Length: 299
Image (cartoon, rainbow, N blue to C red; front, side):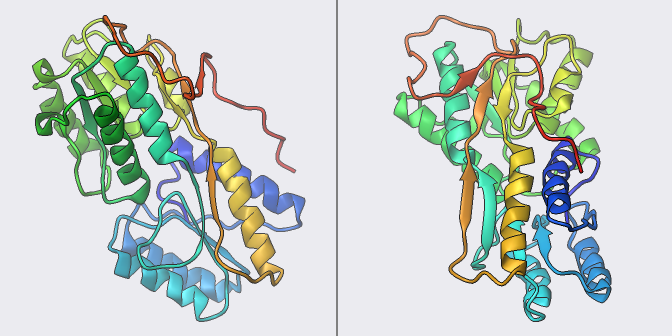
């Protein structure tokens, strides 16, 4: 079950999971939840009747209790469940993710190294992945002696819906005299901010620096491509399916936590200001203008 089949994230994850499943003689059944518990609950009822062997589940924007209820429906029938991208508090399950904290830390350090001290952030803190990014952002500021400014905190606690976020983006941009750069918690948010900026006549990066997170195809839809963090989403799909197949084949043991490495991709949406802070030597930064597509073709 994925949160939004329209997103480049879900399609890339499904490619990885589907390719790995096919290599092992399995087929994948896709369910789209739109990040809603009611949809996840409906799909759970349907696929339990199909006699599936295992579930890879991206928790919805609902409460931990509701997401746990979905998981328990499968566990009661001894059907293994793998969580990906988002954790469920209180649940001890196999989990596949990327290093969200470190990725956000590196991205914020990159902005600081380019001379930015006033960095706004917007993301949804209801998800464990984006909450980790928020923590990484704050730690990077602290490590450089930059106070966290609540006026530049545009986090929210709900799922991303395009139309309301467009209005929220206008609110953020109306306050741009408080910051020189925006850290958007994912590329979908960054894309909306980028588009609204153009409508308002705000040039990126000359008048405003902008970064995203995920490295989806949408990062190339503007004149200046988006600087972002590349998540190994295809590989996350592969690893999730590998774990699920092992569990379906009877492997026991304690839950696994797999955290894959991300890296920064600088494409030019950040303006370099005068800086006194060097980029940390352990930051993994790559310069390129394409999506990583070195994947095996689906079988």
